[in-house]
Length: 155
Image (cartoon, rainbow, N blue to C red):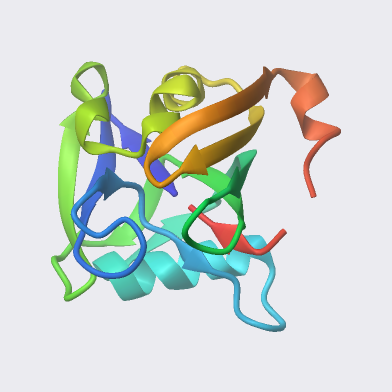
C-alpha cells in the first residue's frame, strides 16, 4: 500500500520478517477468506494503526526468489486514510517527498515500477532474484498490464 497526499508518500522502515531493515510500503500475506483489498486494510491497521480509505489496485508483482518461496503481490494506492501513522513492532512510518523516495534503501525492483505508480500508472511486474539482486525482469505498464493480473500478498 502506498498512501499519497500533498506530494508525499507514506513509507515504512520494515522491522520484522522478509525485507527487515528495508524501506517499503506496508503489506503482508492475504489471510484465508480475505480479498486483497481487505488484506491491505488489515495490514495497514496492524503495521501503522491507520485505515486506508478506498484503496485502488494499481499493479501486481511476481517474484521468483532464490532463498525464499516465490511471492505474488497486489499493489494498492490510496490518497485518504483514518488514524495517525504510528510506529509498531513491525514498522516505523515515514512521510517522504515523492521526489526523494529512498530507492537505495528499498528492494531493487521498486525503482523499476514505483516511480510510474506514483505518477498514476498501473503495471504488472515479474522479477527473478538471486538473494537481493535482480537476475531477470519484465514490467508492463498501462491497460495491457491489467490483463496479466491474477493473488496471495498485498503491498
